[in-house]
Amino acid sequence: MRTDISSIDAEAKPTAASRDVAFVVHCPNDSAKSSIVREIATEIPIAIELNGFGYAVLMATPSDLEDLAFGFALAERLIDGVEDVIDIDAHEAPLGIIVRMTLSPSCVPRIGDRVRHRASESSCGLCGIENLEQAMRPLPSLPPAPDVDFKSIFKALENLRSHQPLNRRTGAAHAAALCNQNGAILLTREDVGRHNAFDKLIGAMARARMSWHNGFALLSSRCSYELVEKAVMANCPRLVTISAPTALAVDRARSAGLQLIALARSDAVLELV
Image 1 (tube, rainbow, N blue to C red):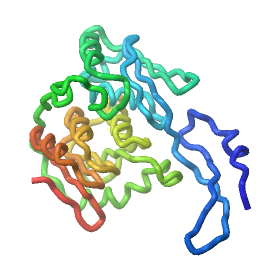
Image 2: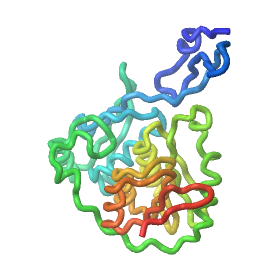
Image 3: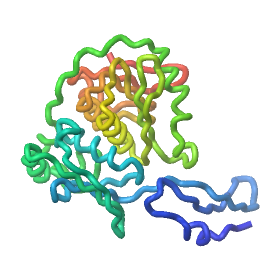
């Protein structure tokens, strides 16, 4: 039985985190076809404007957008803390959402400098940068990470799925979680983009004045160099990712003293040495 997809999509809200879509199911050993309705994650353009400058356009899930903007500004080194943000608001536009931030006067020179080196394309940190020196800016050094009981990491891994409501419904969202030293998950943010999810978590923590203490960040993705840099800029002492790191991620983590734990699975994790 076929389902009329138009009747499903007609009620979809473009700014919702997910919506229902109809699919036809095909099986390799069965000529019969069936129809199902699945909830899928939403991805729309999110424009970030800083003091009137069109700084970046991110493809992101339209939820927790103020957290996203705060975390993105911190990762881009445009602000040093939440006190540098004077105002923030979001406006729906015909093709997406515009998040406008007003930063303190002391941050304005940074905006101009980065705009000259960055095209408004992506949150990944490298896309659009014309000057390679900007892409490989030195990272600050982190203090040595406190010892960790690896049982806490396995505990967080076991419980991560229960903190991913959007991914449970859609199967298409990454998660970034703040975990304490005992492995309890204190805060989670989700997005179709792994960078966006981490920015949302960092932004939410900054706005709530939360720190890592002796805990760690757990990401449901591979470890690209951008995620290492976001962790370092957020003073995160320990980064745990579900999948493998890239070689550049390893190099950047070592240079900054970030403890990197990758390929984190229920039966084993790999700690970078």
